[in-house]
Image 1 (tube, rainbow, N blue to C red):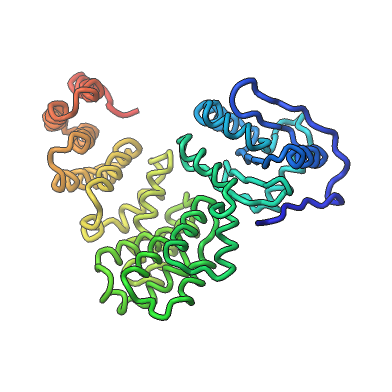
Image 2: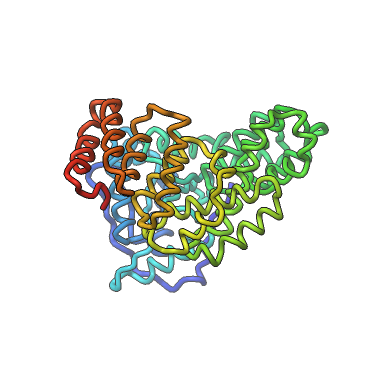
Length: 417
């Protein structure tokens, strides 16, 4: 358990905010200040309830929309609301960006984020009636069954998040338990490195298939990876080579994405990034770096920037392309079609699309990509032939979209925006 303490001297005396309790669904207390939190904690203790604390993105257009969507799908559900309202006092905290916002509530929000180390939104934290932080998880989807399952764990004194951490700190290194702990850390958006290191130190013989599986599924992007990478020759004798290589590539890309989350000036960053990781991981670094940069290119809205094209012109060669899956090839080709006007890049995208069809020749989506690229490059007759074939192969529910594309091609109208 983790004791939640907000020191009184950190805050001025606050005026209680207004309550907003919905008639249906989970009833949330809002506009929380320090004084109001004290009142809620006192009430929870007297009623024998826990406190459910939801951190939302913030009172912005996107934050409000996300909360409303989530409320309608999850918190308005009768099964969810019945369980939550019976066992918890629910509290919504979010930063209000409106100029007339309550500054005391915003100050409380900022202090909570710091004290509770909240890094992901939305985050769900649970406190017992004594204000001990006992459980937490973050939101990954809109499945009410997942939310209900996780919120029920808050009441389970053996299985909730901080109970698992306490068991680890008391020496539990059982394999099944560690897998459970690693998964709980992932759901809580917390690092598993400390626990992976404890696992490594607890094994007399670490080099087994079972231990390799634990390491590769521990969600540790530092400790587990370093141990598997620095002992490659030993692990190659124990783990399937393709499995091991895929793990290395995946983890290196995660390292890259954490270092260079947003890359908008490709010419400035690409060379240094690729050189850095190629030097650090000679067999895998260049491929992982280029792949990461390609997907950054996909994320960007403007395909006309010549610095984006620099990446393709400099680093995408046949040796790189043959390592991509048909799905990756088609995805990159499609985004090239949608975004790019440079004929060199469009022809490159056409070659990626052609390669995807060599791997999966009768995939209608891949044929559609290939046809659109041909059309954008002025090869109209062939484009119409390929799009016609795609229309024949696609399932009935998707034929309308394909027919519209074909009609535009026949009418000489753009198939892109």
